[in-house]
Amino acid sequence: ARLVESGGGLVQPGGSLRLSCSGFEFAFSSHHMHWVRQTPGKGLEYVSGIVIRGDNRIYSDSVKGRFTVSRDNYRNILDLQMSNLRVEDTALYHCVREEVGNWKPFDLWGQGTLVTVSS
Amino acid sequence: EIVLTQSPGTQSSFPGERATLSCRASQSVNGDYLAWYQQRPGQAPRLLIYGAFRRATGIPDKFRGSGSGTDFTLTINRLESEDFAIYYCQYYGSSPQTFGQGTKVEIK
Image 1 (cartoon, each protein chain N blue to C red):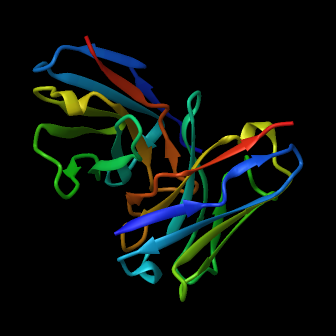
Image 2 (cartoon, rainbow over the protein chains, first blue to last red; image 1 turned 60 degrees about the vertical axis):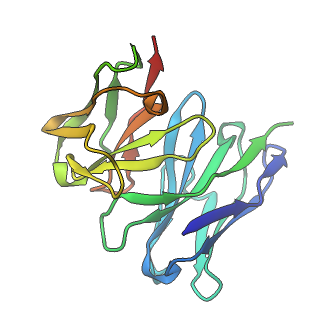
């Protein structure tokens, strides 16, 4: 099983970016999925999550109203649409799988895709 | 929101020694939802411990989690080169999930 992120890059403050994550060799549609970002100074920070059917989504206060998470269980893809980006959104963004069930730990992590917000 | 504070920030130890890492919650939490992750340089985090003391698949018994309420501990026995890494605790029993800031275990 593995997760592969894509879509990172350099963007100016106020700009937008769409991250994608593909899941391979596991039952993607059986897992809640999440995004967690990482910076050298702040460590791991929870960003967003979406339940199996996609009808419930969670956002941290720092990204609420600017980021939108979605999923496509037919193509095994998790997306994160990021808008109105800020310098402080600069981070390595990991796609993360939650163990099967509810309120479970994160048992599979992608290597991450780097987002740099700078003018 | 539950805040997790890890200490020390950096733990310097010799190979073969034991390391004891702390994770303190800002309020009492259910240990059924407390996890520890290891992140080696250049790698993604991996799950070590869940439910405060249960080892994830493939994790050797040199890693031991313990604690309850507000105080949780990860003990690493007989440190080997591959154990020198950053360790994070996480509470996944509420939304949004929260992480501690991490403890770096480095070679002395």
